[in-house]
Image (cartoon, rainbow, N blue to C red):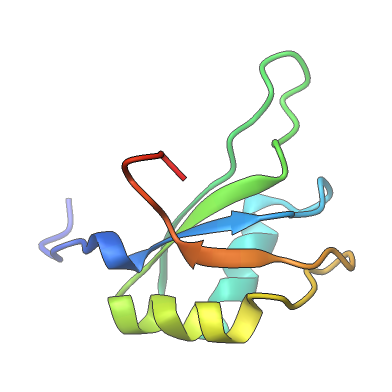
Length: 93
């Protein structure tokens, strides 16, 4: 386990992901603006395909804000316009 203190402000909710996007694709994309600690794309139980949204944890709150500035409203690798914001832990998104 890392000694790094994780901040809730460094966890992002990313919506409208193309179903073709993999966790590696998402991680590589967000790594353009900072260190990615974790990528989680929830999957459907019956198909194991992800649900079109996910969570990205950046190294710092500033890197998370940089990712929002860079990717919110921009397209993913397959042309889907992304919604990127700080994850709301109360709503689990």
